Amino acid sequence: MHANITERKISESSIIVGYKTEPHIDMYDTGYRAAELTLQTDRGLISPVIKWVKIPMITPAEKHDHRFHHMKTLLEYAKKTIQELAVLELSIFPVQPWLDVEELGWSVVAISDNDQALAAEAAKRVASTCWEMRREFIVEKTPMSEVVETIRKASEGPIVVSDGDDTTTGGAP
Image (tube, rainbow, N blue to C red):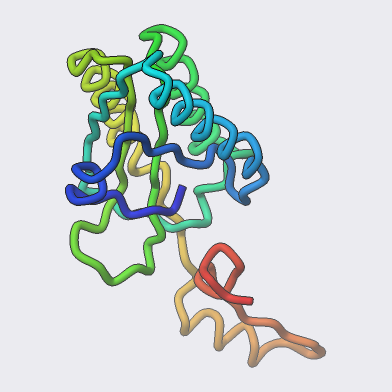
């Protein structure tokens, strides 16, 4: 889910399959889907076509959890799109917002069986919904002056100050 999809990754790949959960508890299922598509391709049963949409959007990872509204809603919509359009795979990549790389931003990747228009439609449909929901991913942060004032007024401790970047989803141990 946190991959930063780029033009180069798309051009050099036949299949890209992303996690559908964050925290990632679907490693087996994701690996199985990727392996299944790879085997079907190798056996000549499918001819995967990848289409993608890069969304000019970076959002706080606090709202990327698949179990709660916003991301849950988008993932359910992606699943519905897979069923309605009969694409082979569709993944949303909300990207790690702390990366300092070119082409940083959300992406939606769709794979069809030899149907470029279908894959493009699936990716565009879900990317459009992601963009429409972009403001719902904003996280209100406590201003530092308010944090300091709260600490000063505290009569006992311990006092813990943390932020969204200082989590396992932010790369912290």
